[in-house]
Each structure stands twice: as C-alpha cells, then as structure tokens.
Length: 346
Ligand code: 9MR
Image (cartoon, rainbow, N blue to C red):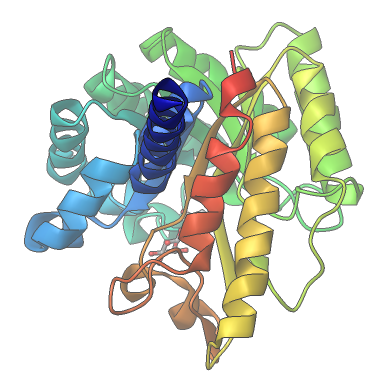
C-alpha cells in the first residue's frame, strides 16, 4: 500500500512539474523544441531606453527584426554617408542573447531617402544605386544576418505589379537582380521576398507564387517567401493559409510568418482579446504544421510600441502585451500552441 501511495505522490509531482515547466516556459524555449524560431520586430529606441522591454525581448524571442533601422531612409538620410549604428546595436543585442536576426528590408517603395525619390535619377542611375545600396548594406551585416527581406511588397492587392520606382526603372526583373546582388554580398544569408495580404489563396498570393516559381525555375537565389500577416478582427481569418504556405514550401522554399499582429476596433475588451488569441493561435498553428515554415515573427510585442494606432485611427491593441505590459490571452495562446504536441516534435 505504501509503495502505491508513493507512486501517486511521485506521479503527481512529475505531472505538476510538467505543467509548471510548460506554463513558465518562454515562447523561445517552446519554439526551440519545435525546431522553429519565434521572433519580433524591435523598436530600437525602446531597446535602448527600457530595461523591461529588453528583458522580455531577450527572454521570449529567438529571432529579431529591426522594425525600421535597416531601411534605406534610416541608414542613408544623406546621400553617400550610410550609417549602420542602430542596426549594429540590435545585432550586438541579438548576439549577446543568442538570437537570429532577420534583415529588413533592402528594396521597398516606402521609407526611401528624400534625396533618392526626388533626385530625378534615370533608370540606369537608379539601377546602379540600388545595386550599390544592397552591396554596401548586405556586406556590412554579412555573417550577422540569417535571413534578409530583400524585396518587400512587390505586388498590389489585385496581384498586379506595384508601380514602384524600382519597377519603373527595371521592370519585374528588379526582383531577380536584387536577389542576385544580395547573394553576391552574403551567400550564406537566406534571401526572401515578403508581402502582406498574401496569406490566403487568391489573386495576390497567386502573383507571389508565379514570381517564386519563375525565380526558382531560373535558378535565381531565392530561399524563402515571407507572409506578413497584418490581420484585423473585422476581417475573417485567412482559412487557406496552410495550403497556401505549403504550395510555396513544395517549390523547395522556406516560408515564414514575418510581421504578425491582429488589430481590433478600440476600445479593447475581453471578448475581443479572446478572438484575437484565436487568430494568433491559428496563424502559429499553420506555421507549425508546414515543415518548411522556419519562423513566426510578431510585429512588435507590446501595444505601446505598435505601429497600428498610428496607421489605423480607432484601431489598435494588436500585440501580445497590453499597454501595462501585461500578457493578453494572445500571449498564452501562442505558448499553448507551441507546447501542444511538442512531445511529437522532431
Ligand atoms: O512598423 C513600421 C512603422 O514604424 C513605420 O512607420 C512604417 C512605415 O511604413 O513601417 C512599419 O513597418 C512595416 C514594415 O516595414 C513592412 N510591412 C508593413 C509594416 C507596417 O506598416
């Protein structure tokens, strides 16, 4: 009888330890067990000024993406004097905390320096300048960046090409050229094209799929496709995310959720938080079931530093922690998704 009582006690203690281990575990430790990276965009001002922000970032995430500081407008506000100091600080933090760095972003229509957009440059000048920019920035960070969002947001929502200055200067081949230039500067980095509203099957993701298929067939150095996943509770969840990710994976590419956030009409309430948690969990679950989905990144982790309220008046509360820095149901939903089935993970 006594051995039986002991067995019950030991079984209980082991069970309790397991529960505690799961409920205390960080996102990154749970993601490690699933062979995935879990990341966040980083606001480098908060990184410098806010110890609580730094602690959470180091504890919870195994990958970081500079929210702004590696964009052309920020690295080269004056022509000819690129300055990578803020990016270097993030890289140093990531190194100290054993985190991967996703470089973001080399070729975009947005956040370009004024001298570039209003300089009246010819197509061939713009081509040369983009080549020089990519070579300089990728070389600077070579060895420190595991993946680059080389090209960001090349498509309109209807799947046509976005008429950016890069498209105007070079036509659609700017994507292949940019990937090749990035590869030449750091052949070890994983090179991505990244876009939003490409989560479900549809016109825009079909355009991305056609581009990726063509690049792969031509032997262009493309390693992955990023799906930003800026979602909102007013829109239905993209139910076809999993088969969509899988078709890109079937091309032999990595896929990644690169900028997840789920905005809601303000004020937030507990019902909306629960619904938001469900969206976050389903996003992550899609990444967990697609083997080539290598990372799941949120676009900031606390509402104070989220881009959403500035861009969508009346909406917000889009991240994992509320303005008081308390975790919302969404944070626990991500943890639960990572923990579920971890025993069967590779
Ligand atoms: O979060 C970024 C915000 O601070 C900037 O003001 C904004 C400028 O357009 O860019 C935001 O990040 C974007 C990212 O670089 C690309 N995908 C969409 C993101 C949200 O706009």
